[in-house]
Length: 295
Image (cartoon, rainbow, N blue to C red):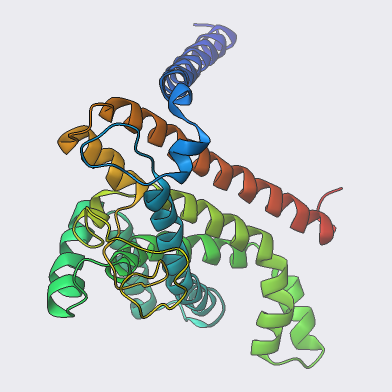
């Protein structure tokens, strides 16, 4: 057969499958938006959830998701960045480094429910954290750490080696070259990977069912004492996140408007994850502009 015809047939097949996947994704997003947007209101976002009566909101669940994300990134970002710097700048290519990379690949492929059960056995039972935000943050750190480390390492490795050699040639130490030259140059990629990983763990549910719990305690948003059991800043209180709330309402919801609450919460979750993705692109673009990488 003529190579030109083969190329056209292959191109048509690839474009057809791409269009089909695009239509399916857009149809799913459209269905979620059409069924969820009518249920969203300011009252829905700012009111607390109800157990038996209609008209409840997602205020506490939304805040718990944001606060849990903050605690998770507070732990995982420094660890991932330090690990990425070691693997990219200092680690020799030997068996030990290969084992570290293999362990990262295995951890990144673990199902989230397995990580949740591990967190339940270790953080909740063995460490005595009970169902709490801190236990959930530790479980999400295990999920987030391998992917975030890999994205930070890739960002560091994309920095040209000539910049490292120029710094060393000027008499700078290895650490100063890493912190003053390599890290600033890799900052757009690091920020992009960090924000994208934040969007991924924001919608996590399976690991949190066994660690942060499926219910929230009564909290006061005027109590700023993080050691108080009723404070919204207390990391040791049980906290139902938005993704867990969606799962619970669909499976165990007793409120008459359970479907409406679920559809509205799904749209809020979807829009938040979309915001993280757009924010990652915007920050990467602005940082690249500032460094003169693009015009």
